[in-house]
Image (cartoon, rainbow, N blue to C red; front, side, top):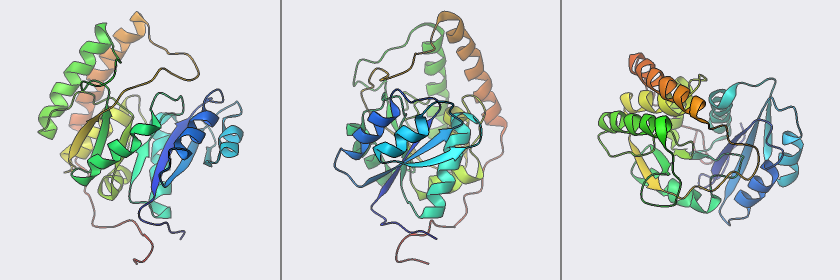
Length: 250
């Protein structure tokens, strides 16, 4: 089994047809001056995402077809476990997550199993409105109650996990729509993982086209509520005592 220095961090970057931005995003992450390794999970892209990511310095894991963010992240967590990483963080390939904030989000793992880079925590100018805003506020209130801590952005994909959370994710990480954010977080909390949030500023997409419009926002509201209700019916995961293999351990 390949082993890594336990101080290193795996940045998992799910990417589906992100040729416009993935190369620059990988280079920016690798250029911030911290010991990060970047794994781009190429989620069945039909463009040059894989080639551009590799050329920028990332390790590329190619999925045979599009599984969605949940499926891509599950593959990334399996890679992390098998190659000995104790800390991982998800960074979107479209450039919205500022690599300068990675270390801040990772710092949340000193006192929690999952650390969320929160967009609505008095930092930055990212805003949403209408049904999408209502859904996010409702989800935040309910999940804050479950976590017994104030969370303002439970749908953020900019989140880090320690080895305990990785172990739980390997037992349960759904591929369904919104499962990668809401469902995975709810089951992790109910299974005993602790959660914190770190205020971050979100940037505009560096490539691609946002998919928000009034109709999709209304659909998002309905799907969010359904995803939450579905997550609450799931069985708690059993976080085993297994540890991720690291250099110097057996």
